[in-house]
Image 1 (cartoon, rainbow, N blue to C red):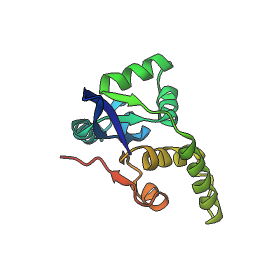
Image 2 (tube, rainbow, N blue to C red):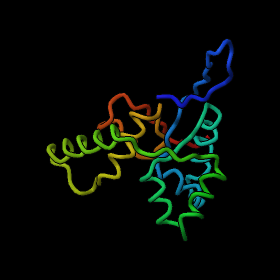
Image 3 (cartoon, helix red, strand yellow):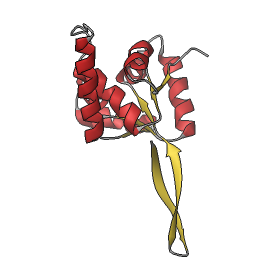
Image 4 (cartoon, rainbow, N blue to C red):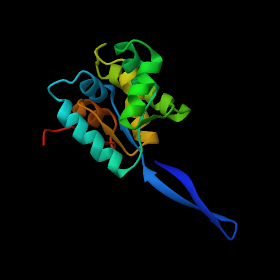
Length: 154
């Protein structure tokens, strides 16, 4: 999926510039905000993604970040300062998340995985081009075709 913006009008036709959107998981944002031992790798992955196009977080990631900070305004300001935008979960992504969680439970999955994990994955798969996360094995297993970017030390 791409995010497109009008570039200009020529002979009444609109030209579009389309940039790939990359989603980022809350684990990566929290690493940056907490200045964890993996913060440098998270920052490098985020900078690389921002160099390619828009980087976004979905509703779930905003919620998880907000629960780590004092209030919602602070969470949104932190994201804005990083250059990360908000992208709402569309109906198709919500439905896919429910289907994937049902499959997870049918395969004997435990409560270790919550619906939030599936929403993040479905949003990245259906509305973006990739996901920056530390949880590569889960997202690769349940969201076939999703490009997973794991922050690594330089």
